[in-house]
Length: 487
Ligand code: GLC
Image 1 (cartoon, helix red, strand yellow):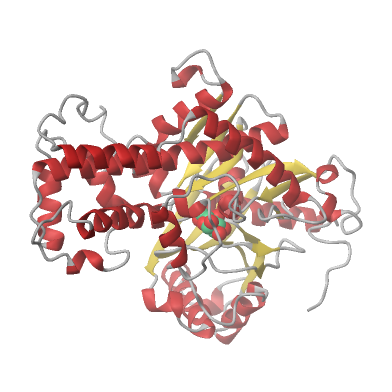
Image 2: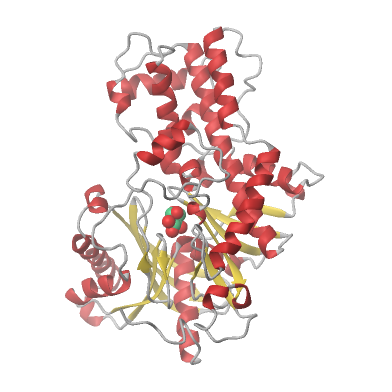
């Protein structure tokens, strides 16, 4: 993906003079489809707030709102060496983090490729591969396994997991294109522990965490003004701290004072699965229907990096199939689902040339497609519309949590490829937030709620949560339900 340039691309206003009428009409149609105006943003936020509350209720709703059993804010004094493992989409990352007790840390890390076939393969092969990578990591940094003492691991497993304790997590369902049989409905911790045992690895899974929870804790550790952790990457999700008194679904399960903090992994990607409020186009419907889990993660499917380019691809193909573009060209290569990713859109948006010659090159080299300049202008506008919709809808989630909790001034720590690399995502998100709250100043620096780059959640965050869990356990405090179900 390209990195953010310092300036916006040249204004596209006025550059449409040479675009023929039929393509201009198509641009207009896309503008209508993909634009989310302020009134709609507010309607979405209102519904979002009630869905967040519903998710915490006994009846539940479509947003899972998972209590994570992270029940302390970091103090900054956490100390010691911890392992962190992040089983994300593309890579497997293993780190050793040394927390120095003074809001700072040192990290060593290795990344291992996650073979795509493992994502749709068999469960045992997945866990064995993870254990193999951990073994390689320990061997390279600690020498022989036999000499290593017990290591505590913070395991970042960024999929919706029901947790009845910090070191348990029953996978509700795979998201982000993963589809491995035999894991949904089961606790993933014993599966990983078994794979460690097979290799005699002296590792205890001390905490199972979501990337958003890690991001929240890591960001708050380095700067306490951070009160929310958000991921805008392959998937999209957020975590924040609520209090036990606001979580009716834990009544009778955790007997602690109502003001006890509890980090909530919202899993807001599932917002509006019941399709009440989000502006879904026919392309979004198709992306959903052709995904491994239709009807799930409806909010995420409009926002996250995995789907943005797919929406774009379907729009482009639709125009071709209607005879509007790519006349007499063979689009076979472009018909392959997910053949482009969000970096493709980012490159189109960042093309610095008025005739969009980089975009021309992109279509030509990747797909053998010779584009005309008006077609490219249409593509650029389309990418801009899809990217802008994603950023504006994302802001609705942040605004909804702010409204639900009553937080009016704070920082949200954000991470993920879309946030870090998609052009203007931050600016567009900030603009939407400002419209939702009707802030007088349009300048981001004056905004009371800012979405800013986060500290490393799945490394430092995971280590911190492992450290915080051990301290709780040493103090004899709860890290799960009063009675932990055995299943
Ligand atoms: C998906 C996962 C969620 C994760 C997010 C970002 O939404 O379900 O657990 O936090 O992606 O990685």
